Amino acid sequence: MPRLRHCERSEAIQVLSFVLLLLALIVSPPAFAQGQWDADIAKFEAQDRLTPPPQNGVLFLGSSSIVGWDVAKSFPDLPVINRGFGGSLYQDLVTYFDRLVPPYRPRIVVLYSGDNDTSMNRRPAEIVGSIRTFEQRLHALLPDTKLIVLSIKPSPARWSVVGPVRQTNELIRAWAADRPNTAYVDIFPVMLGADGMPRPEFYVADGLHLTPAAYVLWTGILRPHLQ
Image (tube, rainbow, N blue to C red; front, side, top):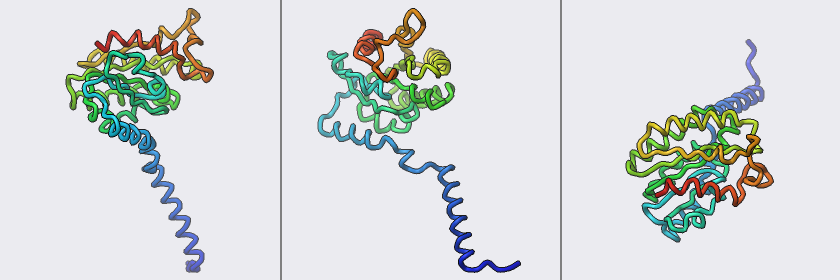
C-alpha cells in the first residue's frame, strides 16, 4: 500500500479532527447551550444583593407569562417574588433550582411554564417528569412549602399544539392530586370563549403573551390558593 504524503496525512488528520469535534458536540452540547439563562439568573442574584427579598414569601417561577405578571401589583398584601425568565422550559427550572429556590426559603412556589415545551415538541410525559423532579427537590429541601402548578394556557399563536397542551395538563392534574403540599390550578378553560377558542381580549398582538385583563383573571383564580 503506498504511503500517504505528508500533506495528505495532514489533510486526513484535519478531516478526522473535524468529525470527532462534530460527534463531541452531538453527544455533549456546548456549555453556552446548557447555561443559556446564566445571565438572567445572575441579574436576580445581583438584585437580591442590593435589595434582599423577603423570606417565607410567595415565589413565582416560569417563562414569559410570569415575567409579564406584575405580582406586586396583583398581590399587594403578600410578600411576592417574581423570578420568571422568558423563553424558559420546565427543565430550566430544574437546572437552576439551587439558585432559584433555596435563597428565598419560600412558603409557596407558583410555577407557570409549558408553552415553550409543547411548541418544541417535548412529550407530555417528559414535561411532567421535569415538574416531578422540581417537586421532589423542593420538598426534600422544604417539605412544608406549598407548590402550585398552573396549567398551560391555550394560545392562538400555538393552537396547532393544543392537543399536547391538553394532554400535558391532564397528566399534571393527575400527578398533583397524589402529591403532598401540591396543587394544580387550571386556567385553561376560563381563557376560552363560547366557541371553544382562546378569547382575543386575553392576548396581545402576537397571540401568545398576555394582556392586563388576562392577569386580572389569573390573579382572581390564584388568590384563594395563596392563603
